Amino acid sequence: MCKGLKTNFLGVELASPLVLPAGVMGMSYSGLKICVENGAGIVTSKSLTKLPRSGHEGPVMAEVPGGFLNCMGLCNPGLEEGLAEIAEFKKLSTTPLIVSIFATGREEFTELTLAANRSSADFLELNLSCPNVFDEFGIPLAASREQVFEIVRAVKEVSRLPVIAKLSPNVLSITDIALAAEAAGADALCLINTLGPGMLIDIYARKPVLYNRFGGLSGPCLKPIALKLIYEVYSSVKIPIIGMGGIQSGQDAVEMKMAGASVIGIGTAIYYHGLEIFNRVNQEIRDFLEESGYESWQAIPALDKIRD
Amino acid sequence: MDKRVTLRIADIVKECSDVRTYIFQHPLAALPGQFIMLTDFAGGEKPFSLAWCNDQEFAVTVKAVGPFTQRLATKAAGDIVSIRGAFGSSFFISRHRALLVGGGYGTPPLYFLARRLLEAGAEVTVVNGARRSDDLLFCDRFRRLGVEYHNITDTGGSGREGTSVNLAGELLKTSKFDYVYTAGPELMMKSLIALLQDQPCQFLMERYMKCAIGICGNCTVDPLGLRLCVEGPVLNREQVERITEFGVYHRDAAGHRIKFTDRGEKIT
Ligand SMILES: Cc1cc2nc3c(=O)[nH]c(=O)nc-3n(C[C@H](O)[C@H](O)[C@H](O)COP(=O)(O)OP(=O)(O)OC[C@H]3O[C@@H](n4cnc5c(N)ncnc54)[C@H](O)[C@@H]3O)c2cc1C
Ligand SMILES: Cc1cc2nc3c(=O)[nH]c(=O)nc-3n(C[C@H](O)[C@H](O)[C@H](O)COP(=O)(O)O)c2cc1C
Ligand code: FES
Image (tube, rainbow over all chains, first blue to last red; front, side):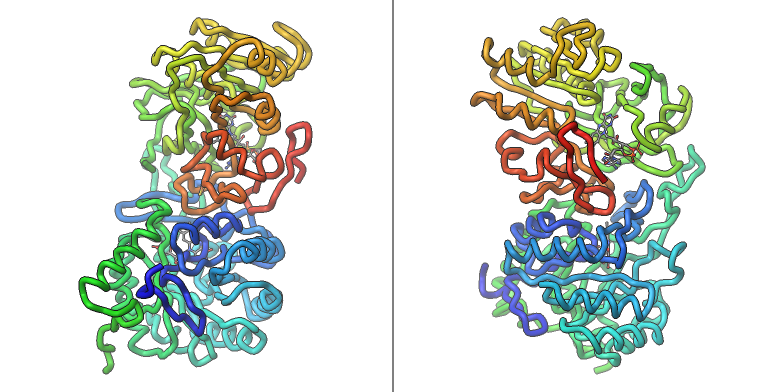
């Protein structure tokens, strides 16, 4: 891989700034591995819960112009088996890995963190923002500054791994939430989880298309919102940001870098462009670096901060 | 293409006690081996292989095995379901001597394939296996195609006694085939590999599917990471031979690894 793509993220060297986001291709070690083979610089596991979950009944995915609604419902084999998949991935690959965990409150997050400490993951991501388990767990934790602060602080107290807080776009002020996470000691932020949720209705069946009725929106239509929220948060925090939401080209990735993200996730675009998307975007970034005279990905400056 | 369409079931054919074919009047662009995701809006959206598909209609043949498929068995013509697809890879259409080895509900997609092979000018031999003769699917349809057709059941009723793999093994010894295709229980397909000579072979392989569009990762196979909803469900022999979980385990809706038992059943 060309030197220009090399990126330092929280002290760890990445061969590419492209991230496989949580919940995409991350159910098994082989799913993670094939994304690395296709050019991802860092991969994230499916969000793991204490106990296994089969997820929601289907349909769990519905196409809309410019994206998809999904209500996977946090399907995962549970922390223990999930960490075993991660260990298997790590036996085959030196690529850094983020373990994503989901819990309903502080104590459970702490418990999962202690288990993650013993894993071979490089980073710990707290999914505070799944929009698809509302019926079960209520409003995502990322909606509350106090909750985010409390959980991040509790996790930071016990975590061996750097902690990333994954936030929701579905809040009044994402900056307030981001500042709370930073104040509690988060090492980085991940923005954004899916938007909404939204819904679709089948007019012939007179039923919601998704069996869970509602699902979070991902894909290209998310990009302007993700950019705006990342830019807003970047303007206020000092910790690095994993940016994601609708990215499908090198131009998109650079745009998100300029909004203030350090590394960039590509999820739904895999549907539109195949797994080759990672290598293609890597190449498009290299082309951009050459064209524009930047020495490296890291040398691409963000816009001036809003509050500069 | 992920286009969803909501359709009325045009007709239902009862194939045997627990298997029905659902026919839809809708022009679907699909190739043999591809599948659709089907929901009745009552919980669950499940993959089914196309049993045939032309400019006017398509069909899927479904065995009632669990909550979703049992509910489907209670549907009547005129009931509404919604489908998306067709998804996945399709069978290569050979123009030469083809051997099709099917078992259980793996047989209907091979019927779709047989029709396309014949149209392409191939010479087609079909081995259709089941436990009991009542469970043999599509016998009459295959016979009407005019292919060389063999029934085989565990008990020997209405045909030979044995397994489709035994019979395929004999045919492979006595005749030359340019291409082998197989669909059905995974352990059946696995035991077929050992009998193949150097001809190419394609397998229709199933894994738990959710998104069907290649992003959720539920259907990937170890250690290659191939997504069976995109790179599969039809795989080449070279791919299958490198899939260490083939005939060994599969993952369920939560991603648990579930072992195949030696009888083709799964232990949970
Ligand atoms: C590519 C492909 C093509 C298929 N084609 C046919 C077909 O033509 N005819 C047919 O009768 N069956 C077919 N199946 C299997 C069919 O999807 C399952 O029998 C059905 O989903 C069972 O659902 P259930 O609720 O009735 O049973 P359950 O009790 O939920 O499950 C019974 C079995 O079906 C499997 N299964 C359940 N849900 C899924 C899912 N979402 N994806 C894959 N497997 C699942 C389970 O692992 C289990 O082994 C196909 C599967 C795949 C992957
Ligand atoms: C099918 C699917 C499953 C997802 N599962 C998770 C998850 O388990 N945990 C999580 O934090 N985010 C999850 N997400 C959100 C993504 O990680 C990402 O934040 C979002 O999709 C935006 O990026 P994209 O537009 O590139 O897909 C999921 C998204 C999709 C499409
Ligand atoms: S079913 Fe989601 S990747 Fe294949």
